Length: 465
Image 1 (cartoon, rainbow, N blue to C red):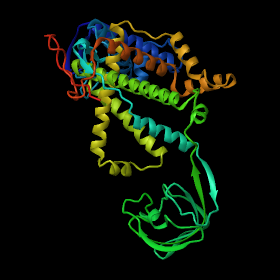
Image 2: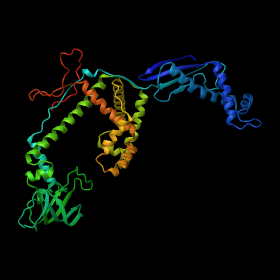
Image 3: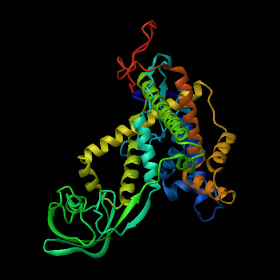
Image 4: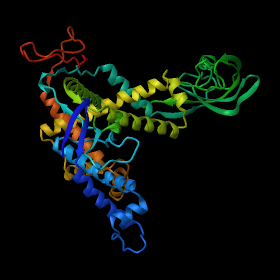
């Protein structure tokens, strides 16, 4: 069976295949028997009617069509194997011999099929990639802010009875409250609790009421900003009438060794500070490692050569678009509203999906090829170990249900892919050139490969801290 192939674009092949007359005639007989088997023909048992009877009842065209529908996929698969090609999606066939009339089985039947091939990548040299760690520092001011945040989270709320006590910016006020907009009461309530750190009314509300004492009354007018998240009042004036009927003070715990021991397994404030500094440093080092891994992968992708059929990108983009529109629908947001908020139109929305789809395919290809080249694998036991780790902190009676729910939502393949990516990124970071941070005076964004490596090419994917 003669066949030939040609590449007609990145990752797309066109195969031309010739089916000899003897193969056509043989399959014609087989097709007649299949039709006789499927259809009831008076006077004959299933499959026993001779071809001439089948021809008379159903016509040669039906038999030939049945034969071609069997021959084309079979011969196309054989041609792919002969040409050592692997298809990634269904082929699109052309039958130039058929024209508008009946299929001609008296001469060689020639047809062609266009098919997207499985995408391929030739990886670049990871060792020519140069990145730079960021300087990891935790300042005293950050420790103080974190301590204050912890104290604030453990504050006690104390009702104030002192009539001379003025309302402060950290208090919670209780007002007999009325707000009128467009001449109508929007809010009218007795004892309305309002956090003075974030009142949530028209701009300037806190400035008007701070300093009031219990029993004080006040009327004033303010304007909501045009960008107010409450569409009904955006850009409108509001009239307020308030009476302070009570206030609650947030009392922070004293920062001492007793407080430190209640927060963590330490004995002093100094130990708590040291622990916080260590934890914040560890967190930032993990963040920086993740950044380096992502930038190393991006740089490797940039250095690699890909062959990806456009049809595969279009298919992936279509799936992304459908998923994004479905997500908007679940959130109750119209696509038009979403696009307007981001300054996009339908064309740019689709273009973004196309670019994202291509990035996803490149990313996946690179990870798979890198894993294959380094013999990085993920087996069932690796997945089982990860599942055990994920739910170990939950009560024993809940672990099985949580595990099953996770697998129903994500699937084993998704988790295995996540583990594989983690291992690939770990190995990739071992191979790239990661330099220490520059000194404070010379620190900058990005770095170059070492000057003494003549084969290195610059990969500006690092940032100074």
